[in-house]
Length: 130
Image 1 (spheres, rainbow, N blue to C red):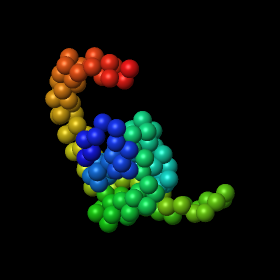
Image 2: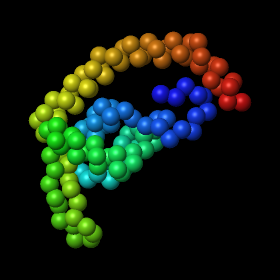
Image 3: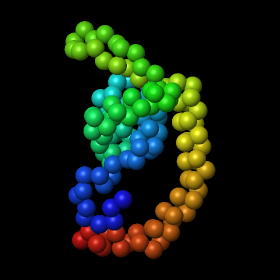
């Protein structure tokens, strides 16, 4: 992780492997879909914070399929090339549920950290931008 306040390094803001898997499962659980649409949906739900390269996405999808977290089927397209549609498996749904439970469990702690930040640094953040 980069600690530079003005970092433009390519990896800054790029999700770690397990976090990326969690986000993929969240998107695919919501609606089975294709790799490109998963990339776009992750950008949406992370407010543009995570922009996934297609090579990384397809490597991760393949790995997740091997691990039994996802399944895929080829779908015929009338307007373009055929596409592989991904959906969660039972194992993938359990993995997603465990991640979500962990997030819920840690939310109280995170809320306390946000409160601390706002009390001690919140005003300074605005001053630094001016």
